[in-house]
Length: 115
Image (cartoon, rainbow, N blue to C red):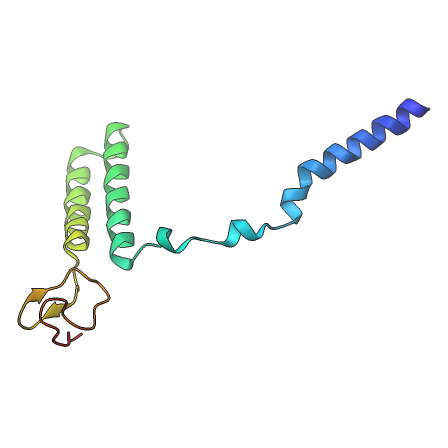
């Protein structure tokens, strides 16, 4: 009879240990360090690059024909290039496009940046 109680207690302890993470959310799981946050340009670039990888994988596994692969590759390659160039990046009227995506003033001449 004692073995039954000990076995039941051990089973309950093991079940509690296994199910605990499902019912208790950790504050560390929600926190995202600021240096890991991506800008909109980085997100678009990463999405386009990931799509290119998927297209190539699908072609290699036979899910896409060569003609479909080429059409999709051209589309996503164009998106990746636009994202890498910083499509919509701020530009100074005198100095041209600026590397700072959130700039309000030109880092070279100090003039306000429109748009």
